[in-house]
Length: 210
Image (cartoon, rainbow, N blue to C red; front, side, top):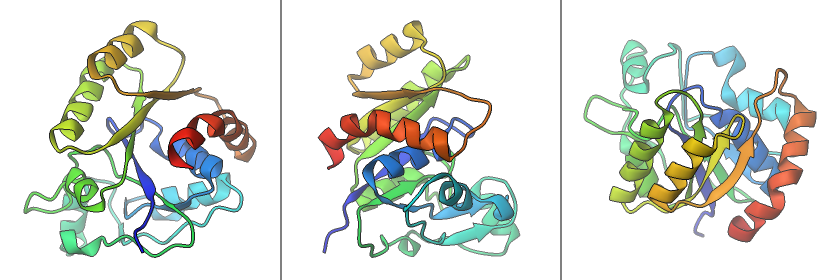
């Protein structure tokens, strides 16, 4: 049976992918899977999503790398070789939300495997997470251009942070990508915040993913 689901990627690291993943998984009732975790194993993104959500199945990672670094380098340190054949979609009872590591061109091995290659292989729609900072327009446009060049279906974009009309309008106008939601930055991210945000965006997501 063909696996249904979506992929969440970001324009870089620390842009809010995990929080957005928790919100979207909760809103849709999808299972969660992060194939590669590099570093912070005691407080991994999978554990974070498990704590922040309710009723969401969090699947174990395919690779748990000990060093917080690019996966290709972290795998070298752990004396592992990551292969593109290592990532068949797991069988799940519900659709699957996959959270990426870093951005779309993050390398997974020394032979040139990048996360975008896996997106092509999975053939699932992608949500891009963009956070406002100086240079984020460039990073967002490059990310969307890379996905477009590979004919990967971009289902929409989620902005993280306060509204920034100058940034958001030029990205949306230039790319034509669908605006899904804007997620605020808060001091404390807890289950209550995730639930409130998931309820807010669930009707928007339902139009595409349910």
